[in-house]
Amino acid sequence: MTDVLRAHAEQQHADELAALAAADDRPKPPNWKLSPWAVATYVLGGEAPDGTPITPKYLGSRRLVEVAIATLATDRALLLLGVPGTAKTWLSEHLAAAISGDSTQLVQGTSGTAEEAIRYGWNYARLLAEGPSPKALVASPVLRAMETGGIARIEELTRIPSDVQDALITILSEKTLPIPELDSEVQALAGFNVIATANDRDRGVNDLSAALKRRFNVVVLPLPDDAESEVEIVRLRVEQLGRSLQLPAGAENVDEIRRVVTVFRELRDGVTADGRTKIKSPSGTLSTAEAISVMTNGIALATHFGDGVVRADDVAAGLHGAVVKDPVQDRIVWQEYLETVVRERKPWSDLYRACRELV
Ligand SMILES: Nc1ncnc2c1ncn2[C@@H]1O[C@H](COP(=O)(O)OP(=O)(O)OP(=O)(O)O)[C@@H](O)[C@H]1O
Ligand SMILES: [Mg+2]
Image (cartoon, rainbow, N blue to C red; front, side, top):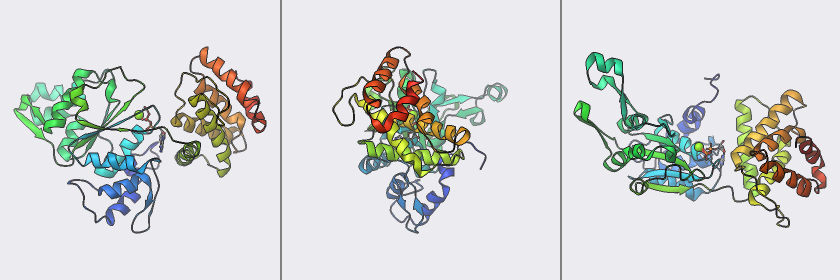
């Protein structure tokens, strides 16, 4: 287990989940491993009744997380919507881990996703040898979740072609999947539900049909409200990622994180933090997730090629890469930002120099 590059949420936080389960005497929906209250504590952090500290996974509105959890206890499915990097995938994994102890029943939505990925397919060797039988059937993650009363996750639902999306309608409304080839059906066990994620930047690829939309409760995950909460998210995640990549994370990195987050927010908002100077926004999203990777890269550079402390030099390349997605337009935007904003800030002169060298 120690050699796995990325353990599933339920493996990584097995001790927290066990501590919460051990003392959980609140009512649980059928087949849930934890009560909704304990799921919320697992996601938002806190303390288990026996004193085990629970690390926060999602930093943001408690109410929003409660609404998401409550939805999963009803007969409606959950759709997490938001711009890229707002932790849709992240939250869906942790919810599935806490509710059914298994976050792996996952369908990755693409334009090539076929109905078999949502319903079932066949093992053709077996099918030819033995004819249609339950053994020749290859269950999709959704079918497996129905059989076990667990949570199925569908990533990037709106990238899936609409006729394939429609396969979900019967499943979500009837909670049954007919298998005409075997003259049978699978009825979902209590506890079965679906968490889908969709990116509202890519909308228009394949919109959700109205019939499908009606079967989902939509929870919109927002960008962090203010700079301090974004700094806190980046700090928390950089520290966790650094630990799993065996990079030392020093508290001294917070100032650099604050600077990266400020650059990201100002460019995203099109105005400087003091509200005085208007600036142009680049084409990329500059999400919190990207700020996390700029910092993680910086730490890797500083650890392996520097003295371990992240400095302007170590984040400059990452910043440049995150901002300049379009080599012409974004380069102009970035240059303008460097000259009008970064250059004017005295304590930022190291950052100005480091970035200036790259454009
Ligand atoms: N509010 C938050 N709390 C905790 N972590 C966050 C938050 N916002 C972003 N992150 C971090 O950002 C990273 C990216 O999140 P994730 O991949 O889930 O985004 P997404 O919304 O699914 O994006 P995409 O639309 O690109 O798929 C994760 O490491 C996650 O921990
Ligand atoms: Mg995602």
